[in-house]
Length: 260
Image (cartoon, rainbow, N blue to C red; front, side):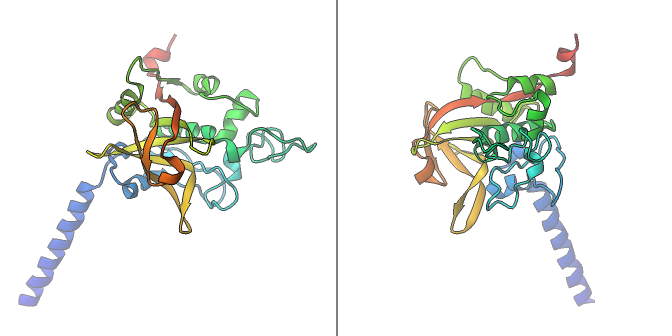
């Protein structure tokens, strides 16, 4: 009898522990305060084809075919493989170098991921297919108009306002950050979370960073008071001192506003 009661007590404790863990888990990406929590809201690609989108989650778009098992050609093809709208290609059929291709289209990848959070299904390749052009310029206004989102342009305190929009209203996208690193290279990232009381933000990188043979798609970044430079990062050597060149955000256009 005593052993039976002990087992019942153990089962009750396990159930209570599971319930407590479930209750403490964030219910949205906006509530995530750790890299592990944020990772659970990424939609990785299937072995073949394209993953769908789900509002509140981010469909991962990887940039680099070499060395990244999340890269999928299908995400970057706006036309037949080998055509001018195949963004995986670095050269045309005549051998001409393309100025832009998946490997350096970080802005396109980040824009696609930002929209996927809003439930808008448009891959980098699909953007080119929609407008019939290989090369498109940020902030991709022609695409936004076609898919029912609008760019948010705060009048003041742009960085803080955009972050607050995202954290408090699910109709706003995560914050797209375009920066120039100390080595002169530009890159785009997505702010997807805040680590409370630290001044640190959780960022998602379409190319990821490598350390000790491990790829980190999600890591930490902090900014100076003016929000014009990167103050620190998990990858300090690569990012500390980076200059913020642009900040973008989009929101779903409410149906009543889109109606004529």
